[in-house]
Length: 363
Ligand SMILES: [Zn+2]
Image 1: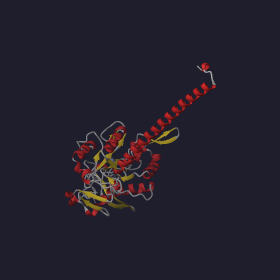
Image 2 (image 1 turned 120 degrees about the vertical axis):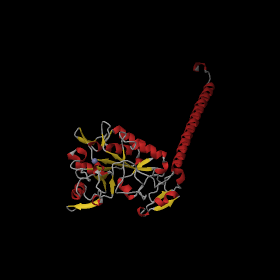
Image 3 (image 1 turned 180 degrees about the vertical axis):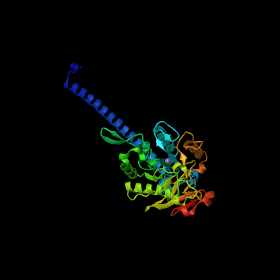
Image 4 (image 1 turned 30 degrees about the vertical axis):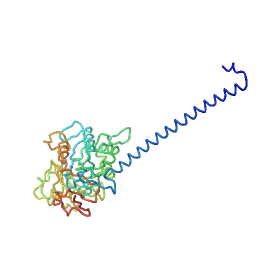
């Protein structure tokens, strides 16, 4: 084609046309780029709007909460879940790691958030508006609750033990919280003699709690008062040897057994070690009353068995269904730990002596 071009002028004209074509292409590209840029900005704007919508959802400081719409009821019941072993196979007193993960997923999806046993005793329930608190308890210091593995000379926490599963779930769902109380007995809680100190220190560091389960898992109904005092005090003494200054505040009754007279179970001393069990946990079989209710008896707190076997219709999933159906019976937070919000018709059931510096807000 260029062979046919005779004059310099013709060449110039062709060059001008080619230049125009190139310029046009460049301009078109620029326009399309800037259009894409606008598209991205539009998306970002939409995301920002979604973010703002999130900020408008209840539970943020200073937001007006529609108590009625959320069904807020801080006089509702609270599940204290009871676990024993985490391992294989699934059994009456053993939950598999897969099922424990399922429990956490189910609770999270149903709007439950973790609080600790001590927070329940203190009535300090700091969870988002519309959510329900749940307490996790582990009895007997079983190996599957907290296990170290030796891998290539290094110590790692077994990814399938309860502590790992809880931490893993918390990492993926920080708003679920991280809390559990381990009701252990001695000599060797969690089954590995060489790691007792390391494990107890680790648990406290992470915000977990240690509870009394007697020094040797004694049956408090069968023991004399002096023997019972020994069981309870030696646990505290040994725990404080591992964790200086740590206060053991609650007791899970071994076998769920307790004597007729509870005074020496609740507090006492033995050979210079004193104990005070502000909360005493039973074995069965229903949710506990709200800590602000006149029905709340910290000396006899019922627990729900976190199991799907032989629960007699009183297991975790039975209660999840029941509390969902009878929504009004479930504790539902207003998102503010400084207030106790209750439907007007339940005000006369509030134990005002347990309010502390919290404000009672009937609606
Ligand atoms: Zn036990």
